[in-house]
Image (cartoon, rainbow, N blue to C red; front, side):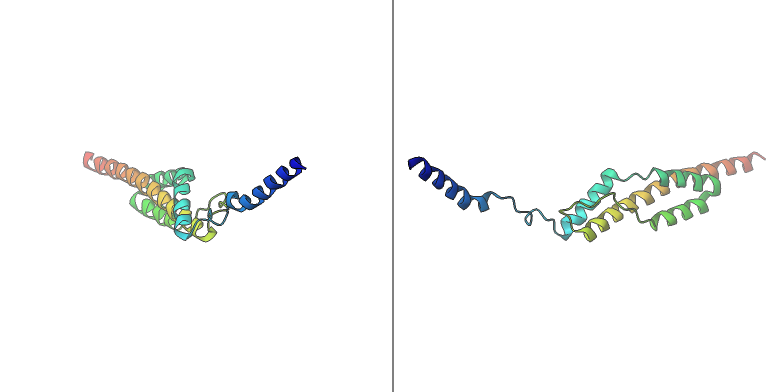
Length: 132
């Protein structure tokens, strides 16, 4: 009888304490601002803008300043998306944060490489013109 009483008391105590120890998923859910920041941070870590860098090199190298401008304009209209959205994030805010940060990387990569190639192209043309 004593053993049964002890087991019952332990089970009652476990049932009473269980709601206090269960992990609540509602408190883990990110709000809109936190989801936006998480998406932005994930884009900074995961997004690769190498393709836009190559595009800037080609645009600036082949068409000088006009090519750089067109490449940057196209990069600013890109809409990159993540491979997945975390379950605890608000999807719309997370995607907005990811896209804004990734688009910024795309534009920066296209602009920097395009300006470098356009400058090289301009210097070559000017030096060739002054050599004649």
